[in-house]
Image 1 (cartoon, rainbow, N blue to C red):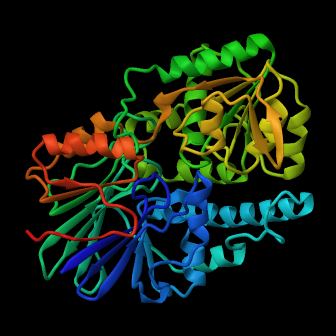
Image 2: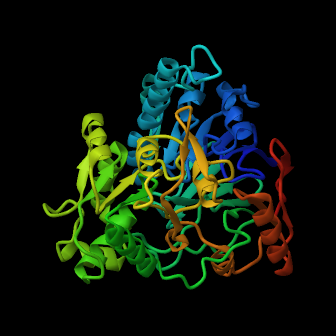
Length: 462
């Protein structure tokens, strides 16, 4: 018998974590942190419902913190097994996990210094030492090459097209002949830099994300909207501040800004990448050429690499970051985190939000409860570092940059099945998106359900 317990990303888009059990083996697919609302973040501090010592292996779909950020704590709690992933995910986690630890340590120290935390003392969830310990357990292998990850369980990675290294995970359970497929975060078709998601022909059980299960990206013109945001900010003499995920979104922004400059649709401006992780992730993106699509390869061949001498300025030190606070526009600052939940972006928002000359441009999904969502919802003030900051800057959003498939693209990917799955389980979505996608999958005649957190589901047999 095989079963799956939904430890996270069930009824929400964060905290991705699923426990696959088969013939006495326990495989944890993803080990993410919960983000967004306080009640979700609090789950990161609760004791794990599964004893870490009983898990035989972890498999990662990709490197984003809502899929990997719980690993250091899992190792701290006694997990000793291997962590399987692609080489791209391994390299990015080498940046993301220590960075996550540093951010937590810095924010705890800042909270203690300024005494705005309810806890005394404020503590990090884990430290850098824990992150580096987790990284020692990583084992990577490439796409399309099956590998036995536990007795009786074989795993094959297929390209997901979401970020560098992202993978659709295909598990073959030998004794029961079940094929269990996890989409992870599925990317978009014809998106910049990476290849399109791979088709998967069959599954006994399909576990699919639904981040945009109730929304279409539509026919937006992200290049035109990005150019408009730049040009209107330039006219005001302001600074365009873009909260962006350090991995994936920042690299796509650099790609698109480079094209707009080349086509003379925007002026050549000072562009500052103020995220140490984004500074380190960009050369990793450039190095993994086997994941690049044809347009990206041509872009690189024409000498448009972000690392070119006349390209953006990569800000690494805290001292250099602070000098940007006094900088006058026009200019562009790209900083993390993408949902404005932490990181250096908070300092830029604190300084730029009160000035109507400036623009804050969101280029990605904003979970409920995050500062990004509150700014998009039109709140007149947001709390940063314990103080309320007036929102006078223009708040804009370009949704065409999303690295997640919308519901039409999810259905397009599902059309790649030559035979319908016998069981579809929907995760990684807010309730409205999950319900909308459930109805669409049911309309295909596929058996579908939406599990709740901590629910255990028996997986159907062929």
